[in-house]
Length: 375
Image (tube, rainbow, N blue to C red; front, side, top):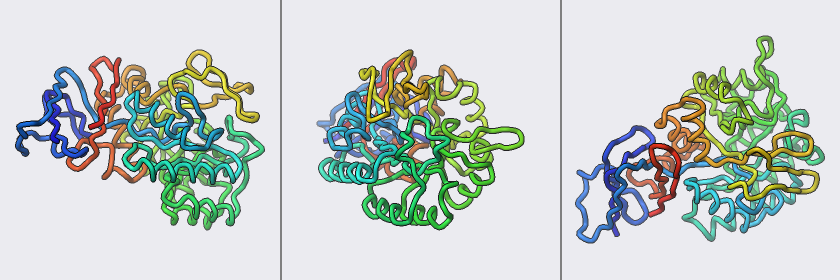
């Protein structure tokens, strides 16, 4: 069955095309150039006059859905909740994130993700993001102190063995690792991100030079940039090849700081939600000593620390345009092609191009309504 999207403003991931048609066949984009394919007589037509369309948003850091929190309930039901809750708001691809917790819980999350992917191979769940437990206690944020630890070779080997093909991204405090341990992770194929780190500029640069290509939520839970000690923030700014995700809710960083980051990082800055829960339906939450309360659009724990965000990727795009002053074309790239590039999967998702999945988000000029379109 052929479906033709017509009259749309198309954000392909590389350019913006006006009054364009996109042809879809068998769940894949056949072409975004209507001149290159013959229309079938029974083709279904979707007229998007006055609307914008892009590849669906990609969220590499999301902790819970509308009901469940992955670290607390490391099971398939939570993964489904995260995916479906995100999809409603135009995010078609997610990395459910499991934070610092006991090894048995981490392995449980890996198995749940593997099982979900086997049963739902065409879903937008990309795998899993493991954030911890090998973090720096001084920069733990809302992570539970009693589960934070320094890595051992045996634990890393177990995580690598069970997480092969499932863990797509792992946040570590690289200063607590030996170079050999970092190499173990890099050679396993897991993308490594520097975060919840108390590293000096020199230590962070060493980690980046060794092959770590991302940081975790720029500005948050890392050493800040000073004029005598530039810290992880300075090392990230000073490393052109390093990708930097940022949370644009106005609480995790000031919009002026985001504007400065964009000027420096340009096409290496991308958007994440880091949502504790989606849709602000969960007002308060308790998992062991980890607690969170929703007030004024932000989740904080009883210590006063931010405990994940309360926004969607659509909110991030809107804030990028309206609060930071980034162009709509760039903001869409920051939510699609750039996170895909950061994960090394930009030949699979994040673009409107021939052969890519027909998973889109449709929105208007005012950025008031983001609607998923799966064909």
